[in-house]
Amino acid sequence: MMSGGIPMNILYDAALDGVLPQNDKAEVLADLQAATPGLTLLHREEDLRPFECDGLSAYRVLPMLVALPETLDQVETLLKRCRALGVPVVTRGAGTGLSGGALPLEQGVLLVMSRFNRILDIDPDARTMRVQPGVRNLAISEAASPYGLYYAPDPSSQIACSIGGNVAENAGGVHCLKYGLTVHNVMKVEVITIEGERMTLGSEALDAPGFDLLALFNGSEGMLGVVTEITVKLLPKPETAKVLMASFDDVEKAGRAVGNIIAAGIIPGGLEMMDKLAIRAAEDFVKAGYPVEAEAILLCELDGVEADVDDDCATVRRVLEAAGATGIQQARDDAERAKFWAGRKNAFPAVGRMSPDYYCMDGTIPRRELPRVLKGIADFSAEYGLRVANVFHAGDGNMHPLILFDANQPGELEQAEELGGKILELCVEVGGSITGEHGVGREKINQMCAQFNPGELTIFHAVKAAFDPERLLNPGKNIPTLARCAEFGAMHVHNNQLPHPDLPRF
Image 1 (spheres, rainbow, N blue to C red):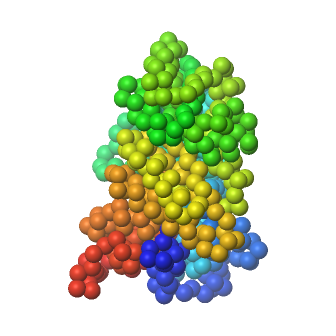
Image 2 (cartoon, rainbow, N blue to C red):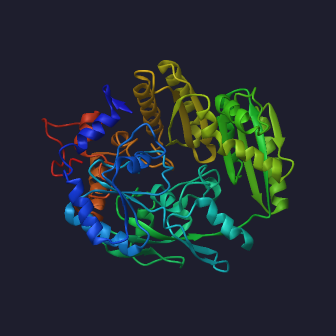
Image 3 (cartoon, rainbow, N blue to C red):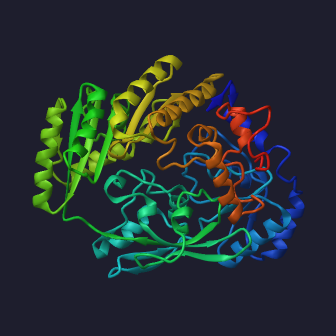
């Protein structure tokens, strides 16, 4: 994203320049090696290079050091020593994030939790599972499957993304409309603070005493502490699940159909939308049986008891017909149902085959505003001369416009950033949010200035300071400073003086 012609990455670098301590790499390495015998510490450039970015690969920073702990004692000691030395720490899981949340710092340690990858306990009677943060999302459902259970949040990256990263970003997926985001499916987390203090947040009971700090940590993007263990809620597999695929000759008709389905009293297990560019990309890649001539398709999954599902399928079919669907197809069996979903879940890599680069956005809007926002995206696409493929968790208004560009062409990355920023600001304008499940990270930090006012940002900084007074955990991410917002042009400055000048500048 850009403001006044200033690329977002330049604003980010300027915000940290001269503020973060300039530590001597050799001294930090020697200190950590002495304090944590047996801890794997990477320091050579060739070893650091694989960690220079997360899934948002447009921005790359080589970390000072990479730590790969295997024990809680190593994590605790590392955090204590980094605090004593004033060294920033960025926590990373599988590196599949799409907002630059795990982007390292040149003067910081990248704490990689991938070796914490064990399933600790499964309780099929209580329908819970205790796991370490490096366990893959899909592995949880695979381990629960023999008990007739599964874990509901299913990001498209579920074969690779880790549950710790899901907690950090409050990840969702195609079934979050009915079953909720990560925050609704996590019961308890164990964390270690920057001071090295171990804490338990939440409980396996229906409620826990005190403030709901568990909800606070979901989506906190590694800024409050390091998650070391998660207890997740498991659900029984539904008796049956059926999918309807509806095609439309107009993308705005498809957008209106989404609201009509919910208005009919139906809460689908999943309700997804793809436009023509995304349809063709997915069909070429997966051969899912999508109608490539359609301007848009809706995938509507209904699950539960078979008699209820059959009734809901009939109701949804009537709604789709009334909304102007040009074709409606119901998956004949589980194999075809899986194929329909494979096309949707592989939409991102499929679009990646159409362009050297793409920029994935993550805004959320009220469902009623889908037609207006789709038209706005089309107008922006024409204005900037960049193609946009639209993929939506349509049921909950979470949209993922994919902006196609070529970073080898001068200025195209900056154009894609600016176009993405306008899409996010349009989401805010219609009453939505700049993110639904990917987080803010580095990518959307400027648009936070459009989303929140100075008083709200002040509270965010106060919460951050309560857990991390020195602001060493993932600095420069998620929460913009008021100075940054003034530079971005989204905050009014009185008499050349920022409100709350005592707030941090990074």
